[in-house]
Length: 252
Image (cartoon, rainbow, N blue to C red; front, top):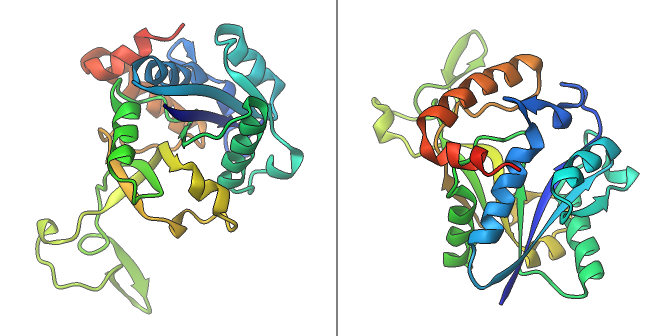
């Protein structure tokens, strides 16, 4: 039987958008959307033991999560990896080490679900996990969507007095250019051996694969305006698209 650790990670405070992990998103705590996805995966996956943990230095966030999801394992985040420039890889590694010492066994996979990415469909986490199972040569599967702009075709940079394509090419149609993805940070599925051996915090030191999600404008919630725009998109998707509505309906 495989063992899977799901991490949900959130810092106290935020310079760009204060206390964004504690916000209410369309009348429900923002973090509950991610928790609903996590526990739907736990209930859906076959032949695997799944544990869900919260890694945070915020007592308020821990209290909010444990109030409705008491089975979540709370991992206190050390001060040295609690700053806004601390690499998230270090948080994954600390979570894995903490839980393996606590449980007394090793995990095969770690899945990270981002709090500020509430727009997942009901099948997305399981889909990314299955992609990883099918490709053991990939150290990590990460979620994204097709980019709206392509550096080979319609993205330009300033060079001296003129503008030129970001990547030099002779393509005359976007369809000729290589596929480009926007990584949305919603889902990461790691081979735990990669996390144990990585010393630099650089995700690019392994083979990566992209799990494609529905394009939801790839908004990062870093400001009040981002948050309001995400709520507008969410209100539409939760009404019109069954896969998104199903996640919202699972929130406790």
